[in-house]
Structures are given as structure tokens and as C-alpha cells.
Length: 270
Image (cartoon, rainbow, N blue to C red; front, side):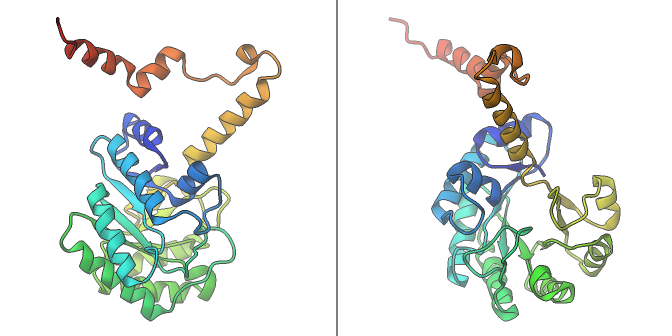
């Protein structure tokens, strides 16, 4: 699952042939606010971005990052319901203390195991009347160790979560132990430079993962391309800028040809 963060990135994921996308909180916070993924972005801003991503994704499932649920168990339930109304196929709820931190950065804190379990219970109960799955995430590995993280994942399964995510295991052995202990589908998070080993998709599948998210690769690539282009402008921008899509291709990607065709179709004849 490539990580999308706006309508254009979601549309490109569909055009590339992927069957599922993940709206990354890190990428949304960076692209929308130019701020770190440290709980600074609000529920309404994330929900608005989710609507844009789902609308552009042309029918493929989009999993939405729901962070901590933006409050207590009742806030979690509202998050689940509103993400479902926005069209998300699943919502990820984590057990960090609010304001949360990006999963592969420092300074994370987690709520108690009992509270983490209760929030997933609330999420599952809210999802019962909607068309959305619950992706339960724990960040306990970095705070209290692997065994505590695994115990929380078992709790999440017991509460009825549909997908389980143990964030930031630090070895292939931990990844294997996690998948072997679960009966529900497991998700891996591939962040180059992060805490988890970067493994090819075939190996992740062999270990037991059903989903793998690449949350910031599109954002990282876009930033690198923009920086290179900006650096070329003081010189001969046309000659030295990194190769990009042609203007004709850019028009096609954002939908000008379709728009022109429909414009003619619906033109009034006086």
C-alpha cells in the first residue's frame, strides 16, 4: 500500500495499478501543514484529506490513519463513524498518548493496556453499524518492549479488531514472532531509515504479513523532485531541471481531456 496524502497522490496510486492505498498521517501533516506528525493536525483536517483521497481513488479501498482516535473511547467511536461516512475501507487506531508521535521517531508514550483495549473495543462496536474495518495498532514496542506489544496485539484480536499492526519491530525475528502469534491479518510498515528491517514484499508475505504500507515514499520522492527543480531555476531551468512529465501528460493526469469531452457534450445549443 503506497501512502497517499491528497487527491493527486491517491489518483496516481490507482493509475499505477495498486489495489489498495493508505492515507498516511505523516504525509498529510507534512503536505497540508508542513509540520511534523506529532499530533498537531486535527481530526477535521484529517477527515477532509480522507474525503479527498477516497474521492480520487476511483473505488479502490483506502485505509485512513485515525491516529489515537482524537480523544477518549467516545472520540474514537466518532472517528470510526465519520471515517466510514467519508468512504474509508478501514481506520487505524493506535495506543499512544495524545498528542501522538510518528511511529519511527522518538518520544512516544502509550496509554495503559486497559485503556488501549477499551479504545479498540469502542472502535469495533462503532464499526458494527458501518462498512469499515478496524486496524488496531500498538506502539508499545518502543516504550515497554516486544512482549508488551505482543500482549496488546492479542488483546486487540480478542476485542474483534480486523487487522493487527505492531509498529516498529526491530528485527526479522520479531516480525516472524508477531505474525505467528496472530490469527487476524497483520500489517507491516516499511519506512526506509526507520526501526524495522526493509524486506521485499515476497519475503513479508512469507513471514505472514497480508499488508505492507509504504507511507512516505511518494512524499519523499515528490520533495526530492521539487528541491531539484527549485535548485535549477537560477540557471537554465528548462535545460537543467529534472525530467518531469510533459505538459500534455500533466493535463491528461489531472483530467483535462475528459473535462473537454464532457464540456462539449453538455454545451447548450441556442
